[in-house]
Length: 158
Image (cartoon, rainbow, N blue to C red; front, side, top):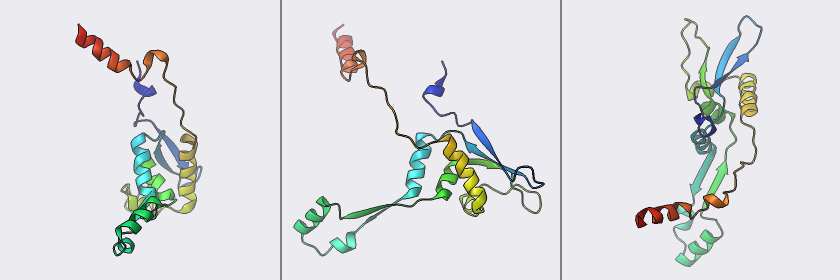
């Protein structure tokens, strides 16, 4: 039985051709599907959380509690970033330097891509990983949350 139903095959990639048909045609390989680890890494790159400890330090305890209940003790902010998405998604590329050596694939280099090429790569990533609500199957009666407990109990009775 194939594990492809349950796990992302990280060897599966798509090739995005940049400047197709030109004398300077290049390619970038991207992950076909982003795994949950890739999504977590992307979330970490895109989110910034700041705790307002300096502002709260001189306040009485009751006031700090009141502000905490209102969610005013920290700020979370999303930073939309094509660069972060590209960092998580690109696995290889064909870019060469002036000496015909492959340019290393680094976060810094990815950040220096020209916008028209970065946008073309981002479109391919978005095509492979469309934003949609996750779907889960409802557990059946035979697989209720108590089933593992019952099976352990029946094993201990024997």
